[in-house]
Image: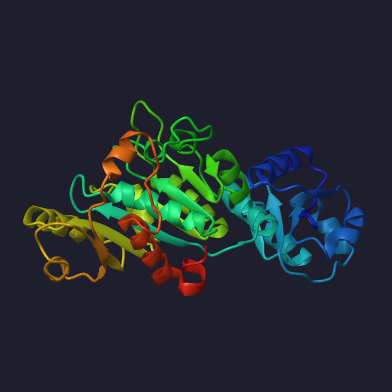
Length: 352
């Protein structure tokens, strides 16, 4: 695969560009003179021209091409835009302020989007409704159907989805390892850093002091996830924080798990008010109870994603440290299969 081309003889600028490229997971071809750039000019997916060699490059008359950037470390330099036009660049990036944009530019050419994954958010309408169990079950069901799946634990007080999956000892990064990260995260780097089990990759919390997830960190994770995964499932807290709002804004479908009793419906109505401020399509998952499914959905004025009857021996399995049982004979398994078919269509959602 052809690599991005950098044209500069400024060692300080080159050090900056190599560091930024490394953050994007990119390797570079470097030309220290315009003549050295000729063999790479047309085939490089991206050309970054240092302002120090812009005039010399323009004098060689390089043919026009897309994706040329002029980079400078001297803000407000009078000749910058003249040089930009002379080399046929589309933009001028001033470092260090434009480093995040440059990371994105490098990442776009070395890691184009493989997939366009759906984001599905799961929220409990009341405490103990079973949202985390449903989120984990959907992730397991999707991964067993060979859908590349990212399960994101976005509830700092939820107890940890790694524990729910019986994977609390799994090696890999947790949220505290990612919260300081700004800008784009490579899908390859994200998947390599996180615990993975076949087609399922998990981002959970560690044990210890709870820290809120910055919205910027959630944004980076979800952008990476939708580029590289078929499905991203986020287990959200009932009290929405900025990270949860970020996830809801990207959600194709949000599942609100509702206990089918009066108190459960009233609590879910309050949660629903917050959800509707950030996302469009909300569907109710109705847990078994004294109220009919149609009564619950009519009271909330939301469509139904299906009923989810109580599953015998589920609690015992989870307390043993087993993952949620999602076989075809279980109510969880049947619900997950039905939902995946509705999301992807029969061909992809039901593949075994």
